[in-house]
Amino acid sequence: MPRFDANGLTLHYEQYGARAAPPLVLVHGWSCQLIHWPHAMVEGLAERGYRVIALDNRDIGLSQKLTDTTAPTVADVRANPGAKPKYTLSDMARDVVGLLNHLGQAGAHIVGFSMGGMIGQRLAIHHPERVYSLTSIASASGNPRLARPDPAAAEAFLRDPPLKPRAATIEFVRNGWNVIGGPHYKSTDCGLGTLTEAAYDRAFSPDGQARQFAAVVADGNRVAALANVKVPTLVIHGAADPLVPLAAGEDTARAVPSASLVTFPQMGHDLPEPLLPQIVDAIAQHAAATQQR
Image 1: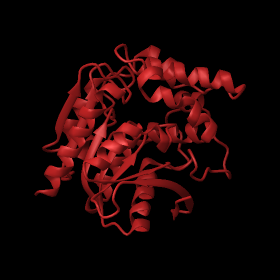
Image 2 (image 1 turned 120 degrees about the vertical axis):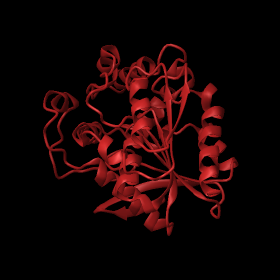
Image 3 (image 1 turned 30 degrees about the vertical axis):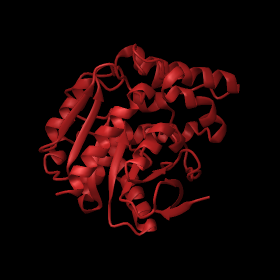
Image 4 (image 1 turned 90 degrees about the vertical axis):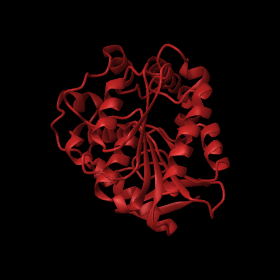
């Protein structure tokens, strides 16, 4: 089982594609494990000539969970957003640096989804020398002036799941993915919602999810810091995203100098299978253009 130690934690990762190929690290979103990266996306990027590396973020999946602290609930965090988190997105960015150190890589192309996009932004802000390019998918700049999530999406997804029985938790998570996936593609048919049972059985960590959520909420406004980012940046966003509205992606692209924005009109807060070839193309072309500079 491939693991590495970083920042006092032992974290899990997987690799795909040729080891000599340019490295591309996938950093997933809140509550997501590395198996939430669609197989077609991982294989597509490997076929385009990249060494694809995915990790379970701290507190989730097969990576180490915090056990020496009392976890808040998601409801606690939403009720008290100013509370100090147990760790920060900058700490999670340092975990990715630890992965690169473990692999002996000077840097990598970074691709982040949702919270993973925010972690990628923190990498570009604090560790730009380790980031060859950044692709931020379905993410945000933390700008407090932007519209909040659609209330139905927040109610369906940003809540504490039932802890038992198994079937009730899986039903809750599947429903959440179907709501935030938007009206055009049903997530439990062709998106990340298809992986709900596999993810539950692999590693269910509600405390870790709550602590990750606290880190996202506490991270605040990154707009001023992003204005100094020189890392080549691509922003991918769905126009039908009810959890992180399109305005958040547009704001991120404006915040980073010379960033590009690719919008998918029918994409929600998800990675639906019918759009994966286009998403892979956009990421691969962005990374390849960076290598040619």
